[in-house]
Length: 261
Image 1: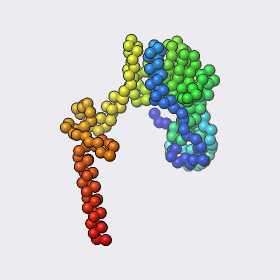
Image 2: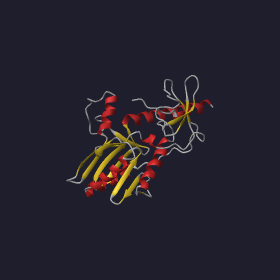
Image 3: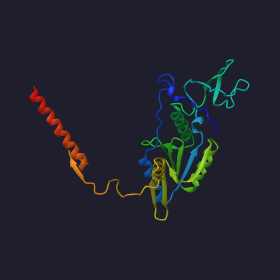
Image 4: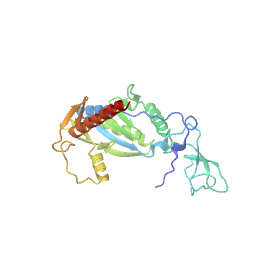
């Protein structure tokens, strides 16, 4: 499926945008809330908002040159809520004014955060004073990382809140947390333990470098390698010997220069 995106790398600071930083929940807070949820038997539900950036209005006046082949019907594009035709020439391309935050724009993430923030506040959520990506209402806690949201709380509260936002945004229900931010989450409610790991990412990297069948080791060092402490840091014997030879050569060069002078 094709998607209209913008060349954000062509935007000029101070002209096309002012601010771009969008607050995110910290990983330490994610670990803290997940631990609290498992210890108290709370449900951990994950939602992914589809095409989230396009849900937010753009505050700046930005124009976009449509790519070749983009169809204009009766002086308008197919998705008139996304952008409005500003100039139609006899030949392509056509210039449009952007109305929604397209993917690729430098300020799209911030615009989406402002949109979600206002929607959550309007529905009675309060934002944490210490974490801009954490919202709470009663026993329900929301962790926000751009368009990935974790609902933590009682099962009935989680389900009721999820249904509210299904009416406002296009949502993909991911169910109980299994993966979040590239991390795999495995938990045991009986023992009240949850574990986070990046085994999937590690497998992906090994596959990229054709090392999927490599033998695992307990420590990433060659067998028999000895370490020495030199100038306050650990180094191998080979590195230490090389550093000593380098210092000896520098000293010889210095002595030769003194004799020449």
